[in-house]
Length: 123
Figure 1: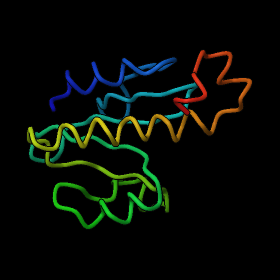
Figure 2 (figure 1 turned 180 degrees about the vertical axis):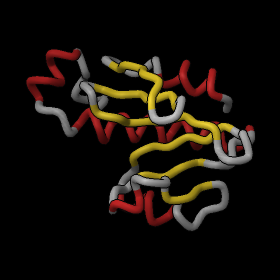
Figure 3 (figure 1 turned 90 degrees about the horizontal axis):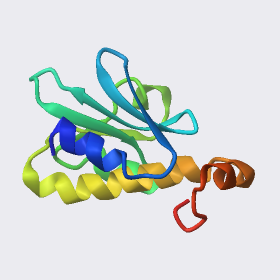
Figure 4 (figure 1 turned 90 degrees about the vertical axis):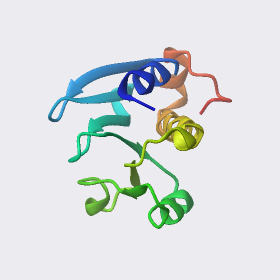
């Protein structure tokens, strides 16, 4: 997945906003809360960061192509960076981005979810 595909995919989630911040990173939010970040790694390859469940964090931190997300994980947050972005991992990334969106959206109050038109089945 490249940055354009990443942005297109993240734009499909309800009530999301996109900003460019933190050193020219593509930052995706729902109700002002970050759920995904696209950025350039040190070797100028695309890399993608997302929030994850405790279980997926433990699994992915040891899995090739993923690392605990710089800055986030060092502060005890369960965020992972996919640093290997070859084609075979695209479906995995779509899944983890979807899960990240659901984790963040479900943390919103039911009232806020209703205001934003977020389906209870999504969150």
